[in-house]
View 1 (cartoon, rainbow, N blue to C red):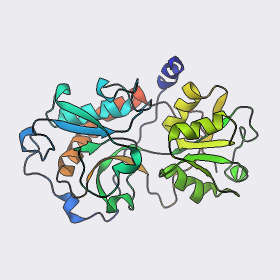
View 2: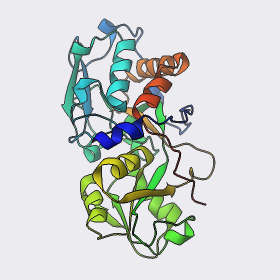
View 3: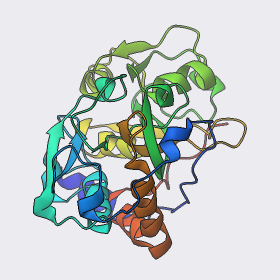
Length: 284
């Protein structure tokens, strides 16, 4: 884990997380008459209930403890909470798996923060806030592997690729790399990581910050081959705070995220906890 500290100190190029116009329903645009704490539509009065998965991986969280305020998403959650008027002890964390977070139906949390990309398909079942982080996918290989020095997407087509089920990384494999063989799909990220570690696959595809963590702390002798370009059409994949469908909390969360962006606080959190994309060239 100590290896991550040096990596995390690198400067991260900060980009604006512009919301996408994806035709989400009108109910998602509604918000409470007031964003003061006592007027918010909360699951538990006086408490902001925030969900994430377990284990909670670095660099998004630290020491598998979302409540310590360390790691990018923990810090973002508490910064959002602060904008809504909550103190740290008024934030309650609950566990929600990645796959079930965007399933249809009522939720037992106010919002979920778990590297969940806002996609049109997911927005049919849940509501997302404006983006708090723009995403690109990173390609990880063993340094001794035959694809370690690839410089183009075309060179990756013959590789055996590991990816976690239900992630946008899987979509990137299918839509951008289009490998000759089917990717090897795993239920959890750690299973996909172990597949590369044990040489069952040639490559691992994960979001770029996670790729830096994998190479720094999870797989000795691994490297980032590069990053995939943003998807065609200019749309930017981004992580959003997830709520149950039609939640009127979304307006206040958007307001909080907007304030964090305009003040520069979100950029500072990003610089502190996420690693630089330097050293991860875009694969063409």
